[in-house]
Amino acid sequence: MRVVSGTVAPVYERPGYRTLLARIRENVRTYIRKQLELPRQEIAEIVRANVAAAKWFGVALAFVFMFLIALVFLIVALIALMLPLWASALIVLVLMGLGAGITGFVGYQRLDLRGPTRSINSVKETIRWAKQRLLGRSAS
Image 1 (tube, one colour):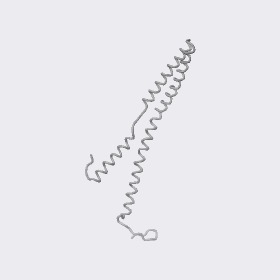
Image 2: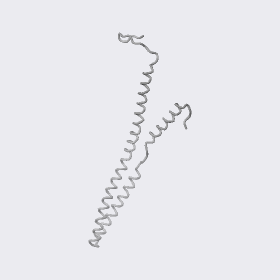
Image 3: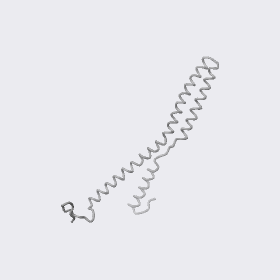
Image 4: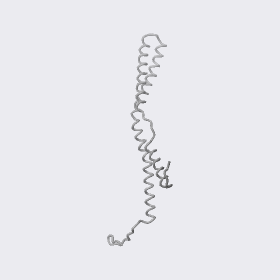
């Protein structure tokens, strides 16, 4: 027996089954919570890495719209009159097409598509460990 602040408290050498089961339950909850948190963090990293690529695709989309507008002006100019007006529209059309192509290519080059590999590997490792501990053999 131990005296704590004027009261007598029993001293146990080992915790009881209820205490052990409560600890196990809490540890399992914590483990599951962290396992669910890891893919969220990894996916957030992937999204942050691809924001730059999305910006380049946005610029490419703007150039595509300008390309379409220039194409419409070119068609109108070609139908309306066959004068140097259409040549200037053709120059704008080519420039917008090149701009869309270059920015789209840069956006594609910066795109990083992959899954949450750390999370997948962590789950596989946990399954291997659990099989080994529970079945008492090497998991393959």
